[in-house]
Length: 301
Image 1 (cartoon, rainbow, N blue to C red):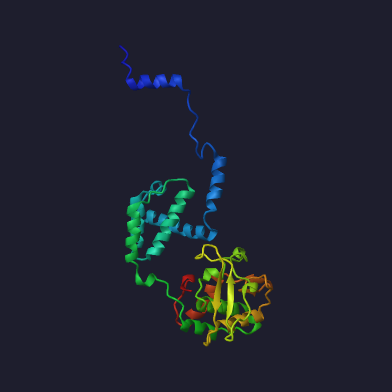
Image 2: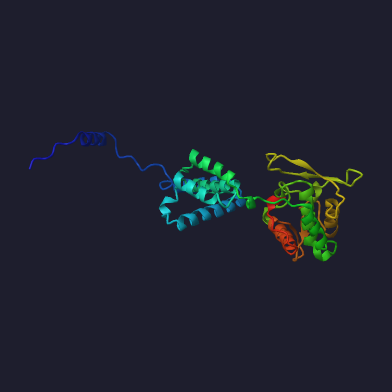
């Protein structure tokens, strides 16, 4: 049987093979694992640990959604834009547009960390934008008003040395509310995350500067001011939740050095520890729940 005539493709392929030796495998994480490990470590520094922890929750919600809808895991990473839009649309009926956008940022970070292309495009952008108009009314954070703040000041005894945590929580609540400052400017997410470069210390609290006993507080870092410091005015209030009175009481029963966190307190172990967001919110919500007030989040301050 005669041999088949070689095709043009076969001839060209044979000619090229004779001219160019076989190339090594492409440069990738597989061929250069030591580069991959270093890149991963550097890329991870693009987000704070607290941000990555929140993104982990977003990724878990996305995977739960895929599993509930019988979507094979091979289609989740990378996820195409249709799947991303489907997930965003699914959340539109129960979550705010901002929460959905944050979830999509978490999924995008997941793709980046795994070195795969994120396929979210203009259709996903419009889906997220549309979700903002479908935000349910009960998903918005309610602000902390005077009534629950007064309840906090009247329901927890703060002047006794055994109530060091309560005194600190009340001072933080009053300062955040009347000072109109985000809670993140005052309290770290964990005790290990406290740093005088980011959170106020006792030394940052200026002496009384007015006849009304108001004070200035120097904030070493502000997210909204692009890492620049700012001064916060703490004005005396003629209410039971006066921030100057609660702050003075806190500092009188908690023996704090100038270099320590302004909202540190003497813990059960006998050591001074920074007040964290979680500890603060847990104590405030515990008091408010006993008096019929709804639970609040850190964004309410």
